[in-house]
Amino acid sequence: MHGLIGELLGTCVLIVIGAGVGAGLHLKKSYASGQANDWFYVSFAWGLAVTMGVYVAASFGSLGHLNPAITIAYALFGLFPWSNVVPYLLGQFIGAFIGAVLVIIQFYPHFKATKGEEEGNTVGIFATMPAISSPVFNFLSEVIATFFFVLILLNLGNFTSGLKPMIVGLVIFVIGAGLGTTTGFALNPARDWGPRLAYSLLPVPNKGAGDWHYAWIPMMGPIAGAIVATALQGILK
Picture 1 (cartoon, rainbow, N blue to C red):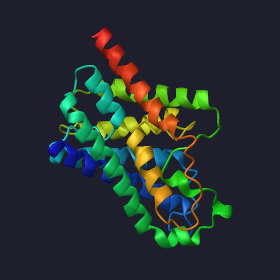
Picture 2: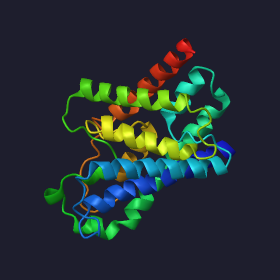
Picture 3: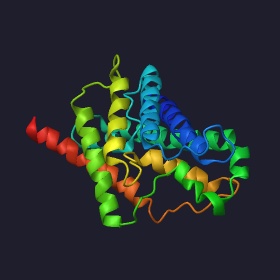
Picture 4: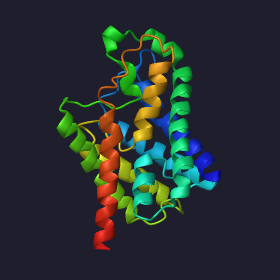
C-alpha cells in the first residue's frame, strides 16, 4: 500500500509540475506564454519535476520509480519484487492521470483563450509527439534515450537517498537536452499515457485529437530501452 500511495503522489507531483510548465509556455495569456522554444528550460523543468516527485514518493515508503519502464525492467531482472509491480504501476498511471486533471483545472481559462487553429494541438502539453514523424526512428529514439537514462540510474544505487533525487533530475535534464529533441523524451509510459488519457476524456476547451496512433511509441520504446539497459548491466556486472 505504501508503494502504491508513494508512486501515486510522486507521479502526480511529476505531472503537475512538468505539464504545468508546458501549459504555461503554450497557452495564451499566461505570464510565460510564448517562451516554448527554450528547450533547455523545458528539459530542466521536467528534471526538477522528477526530483520533487521522487522526494515525495520516497517519504511515503516508495522506491521512487514513478515510471513503469523502470518497475518492469527491474522486476524482470530480480531487482524488484514482482508482488509490488501491480501496485506500483497502478500508482504511476493513476497519479499521472490525476496530475493532468489538476493541470487542466489550473489552466482552464487559458485553454479557453487558446484557439486550436492558432496554436496547434494542445495535446503536446500532456503527451509527447515526434518532431519528424518516422515511427521506426521515433521508437528507436525512445529506446536509446531510455537506455542511457536507466543505465545511469542503475549505477546510482538507491536514487531516493540524500541528494540523489537531485542527481536524477539532472540526468533527466541532460537526457532531454541531448536526446529529447526528436520525440520529446517520454522515457516513461505513465508520464505519456496518463495525461494523454485525461486530455482525451475530459472536456478541455479547444482541444485537439489525442494522437493515439503515436501512443504505442512512448509506451513500448521506454520499456524496451529500460529492459536492454538492465540486461546489459546484469551481464557486465
